[in-house]
Length: 147
Image (cartoon, rainbow, N blue to C red; front, side, top):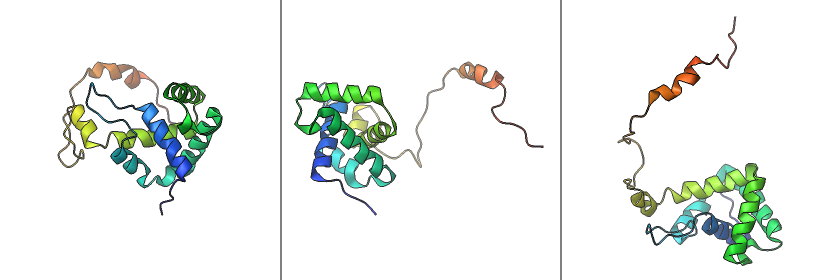
């Protein structure tokens, strides 16, 4: 079951999304507050709903009122203050914004990616330097052996 955000919560979320990822004419990509991206973002928050609502309340509290009513510079300052504070609610909201943003076909094309799911065709991953894993291979196991 999907629980919708209130009008005030949606305004705060859209303002935060646009602050987090603004539109870029240089790369011809929309901001995370774009209508299509925002609709995808809010369509079904699922397990993140409670954390997102808490995050939006914290943003408004840090703003001393409605985050969405602040100027762009003030929004950025409040968002940076909140980022420094961190926490699970912050992580949930930023994850929701990022996932919706990178699902958008326009964004994927701007990154040189074919806008499609990774399966069943998969994606080619460039080979890297496997020796970077040597320290991990050499360390002791992180588990204990069961008799």
